[in-house]
Image (cartoon, rainbow, N blue to C red; front, side, top):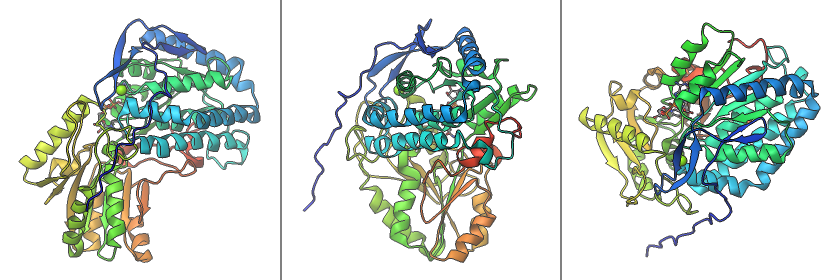
Amino acid sequence: MIFEYAAAPESRSVVKIDPVYGHFINGKWVNGSSHFNSINPATEEVLSQIALGTAADVDAAVKAARNAFDKSWSKLSGRERGKYLFRIARIMQERAREFAVLETLDNGKPIRESRDVDVPLSAAHFFYHAGWADKLEYAGVDTTTAPHGVVGQIIPWNFPLLMLAWKVAPALATGNTVVLKPAETTSLTALLFAQVCQQAGLPDGVVNIVTGDGSTGSAIVNHPGIDKIAFTGSTEVGKLIARAVAPTNKSLTLELGGKGANIVFGDAAIDETVEGIVNGIFFNQGHVCCAGSRLILQESIADEVLEKLKRRMDKIRVGDPLDKNTDLGAINSAEQLAKIRELTAAGEAEGAGRWSANCELPTNGFWFAPTIFTGVTQAHRIAREEIFGPVLSVLTFRTPAEAIEKANNTPFGLSAGIWSEKGSNILWATQQLRAGVIWANTFNKFDPASPFGGYKESGWGREGGRHGLSAYLKGSAK
Ligand code: NAI
Ligand code: MG
C-alpha cells in the first residue's frame, strides 16, 4: 500500500505585501521613478511593483550612509552597535514566519527550507556579529579595527535574506554603514528587513536599500563615495566589478560561482551518501553557489550509488513551495529556467546520458525535474559550467589521485565534499582539494562562525567567522 501526502500548505495570511515599493533611504521610504514586477515564480502571479533605482537614488543613499557614518554610527561604541544588532536578530526571530512565507512566495524555494534554513541562519548571523561588535580588538584580525566607512553591497536571488544577513551583519558590527541592492527578482524580504531596521530604532542612514537591476548595481560599484564593495553573484558580473574597482581605492570582496565536486570513495556508507548527494545538489533547486554539482564516484560502487540515487530521486516531492511537504520548489525565473534548459540540452547533444525523476510538474510557473547526467566527461559543458539548477553531472574514477585531479580540474574552487569511512582518506583528500569549503560525510552545512569563500574564479575574500570581519576593516588585502 502506498500512502500519499495530503497537501499541507502554510498560510500566506501572515504577510502583507504592498502593491508598490519605494527605496529605503535615510530611514524613510522614497518613491521610485519607474518600477518592475516581482512575481511568484511558482505561479507567475505578480506580487508587487519594485522601484528601479537610478544613479540619483544611489547617490542619495550613499550621501545618507556617509552622513550616518560621520554623525552617528562611527561615534557609537562597539557595545552600543552590538545592542542594535542583537535587537535586529531578535526581531527577525519574532517575525520569522513572516520572513519565511515572504521568501518562499518571492523566490520559489520550499517553505521547509526558508523556515528551517534561510531565516534561522539569517538571525544567527546577526546574533554572531552582535557578539563581535565590542570585541574587535580581541578577534585576532589581520587588519586594523577601523571600519572602511560606506559599504556598497550587491546580492543575488538564491538566498535573498540570508545573503543580506551575510553582508549587513558584519558591516554594521565593524562600524560601517551600508547601501544594499537586492536582486531584481527577490527584493521583498530586503524591504521587510528595512521595516525591521525601523522597528529596531536603527539610526537613519545606517542601512539603505535601493532596489533595481544591473544598472543600479553598476551605479553602486562606480559611485566615488563608496569605500568598499561586497558582491555575491555570477563570475561574469564579478569580473566586471573587479575591473571597475581596480583603478580606485575601494576594497572588494567577491563571492562568485562554483562547480563543487562531491567525491564518493568506495568505502563510503552508501545510504548516508545518497542522502548527502541529494542534499548537495537538490537543496534550494540547486540554486546554490557551493552545490555539489559534480558527483565523482569510485567505479567500484558507481552502479550501486546510481541505482539508489535514482530510487531516492523518484521520491523527491516537487511542487507548491508553500506546502510543508515539498522538497523541490520553483526555478527562480524564466531566465534561469532557460539557462538550465540550454545547458541540459548541451549535455545531451554532447553525448551524456540524461535521466530525470518521474514527477509531475505544475503547468504555471517555472519548473525543472531533478535530473542527472551519467557518462559525463571533463570536456562536457555540463562538467565545466555552473548550471545553477537541479541537475547533477556524474563522473567516475579508479584511483584517489584521479578523483582529485578531476575535482580540481575546474576554473572554480568554492566547495567540495568527500564521502569515506576512513579518516586518513578524508584528511589526505582535503589537503589536495583546491576549494574554500570542504565537507566530509555531510554537505551544505553553514554556520556564521565558519568562514566561507573561494579560490580562483569563485572569488576573493571570506565571509563569516573572524576572517569575514577583516574584510570590513581598514587594511584588508583589496
Ligand atoms: P548576476 O550576477 O547578474 O546578479 C547578481 C546581482 O548582481 C544582482 O543583484 C544583479 O542585479 C547585480 N548585477 C547585475 N549586473 C551588474 C553589474 N554590471 N554591476 C553591478 N551589479 C550587477 O546573476 P544572474 O544574472 O541573476 O544569474 C546568472 C548566473 O549567475 C546564474 O545562472 C548562476 O550560474 C550565477 N549566479 C551565481 C550566484 C552565486 O551565488 N554564486 C548567485 C546568482 C547567480
Ligand atoms: Mg520574485
